[in-house]
Amino acid sequence: MPPLRTALLQSSGVLGDTAENLKALDEAAARAAQSGAGLLVTSEMFLTGYALDLQDIPGLAEAADGTSAQAIGEIARRHGIAVLYGYPESADGVVYNAAQLIGPDGAALANYRKTHLFGCFEQDAFTPGDTPVVQADLNGLRIGIMICYDVEFPENVRAHALAGTDLLLVPTAQMHPFQFVAEQLVPVRAFENQMYIAYVNRTGPEGEFEFVGLSCLASPDGVTRTRAGRGEELVFGEADPELLSASRENNPYLRDRRPGLYASLV
Image (cartoon, rainbow, N blue to C red; front, side, top):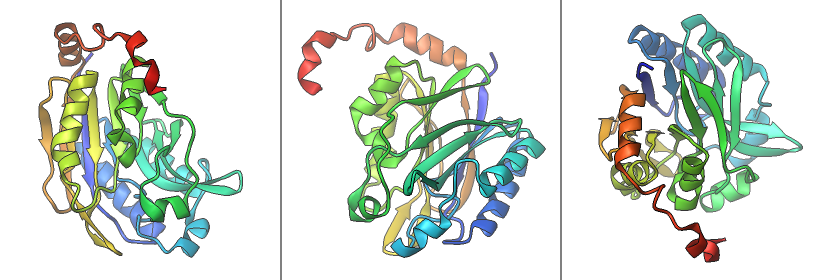
């Protein structure tokens, strides 16, 4: 199988303006497709912005099959590229911090709800999801999804590794002073779990937050294949099934596990 060229859209968009953010997504999808990418990944809460007033979030939240999802399906279909976008999801009378993967034909492939909510803002704004492993198949790769803080829990990523995730998509809102997560933790997670991780951040000031950028695609050999800077940027990396297969053959972490020793973790 050929590598999956993956575009990482490091952008904060326009806070509270879904229409402008859809326009930016359309433009990024066109650029990514023209550069040969088969997948475009955006940041956490890309559709609406992250640092929203709590009272505004219910009105901006949408169903997984709502108006914006249909618009993004059309964007994906028109440009022939899969899209992973972050958004506030309205369902069951509550709001989730969610991310949805749309296929290049415009069909929804997977929807994930953030399971670990970071800080008072998220805990006040959202209901945590309860499904840790959400996957879909794309271009011969098993794609997994989680959001920001989720990747900082090793059990979460290991669950994906044991479920066969090849490429883990992590839209994020990584803020100062925690940039070491992007710089150090994410490549280590990719190595210890033998997978690719696409970690896609917001950038610049937004409300009380200062997002640090530094989006990256880390590979199972621990190498950062592409890295954005601190500003608005569209960067590209390759998720190569051949490198993945060779790395898994050479690295024994998953084979050498002794689950019986870890019962205390659960």
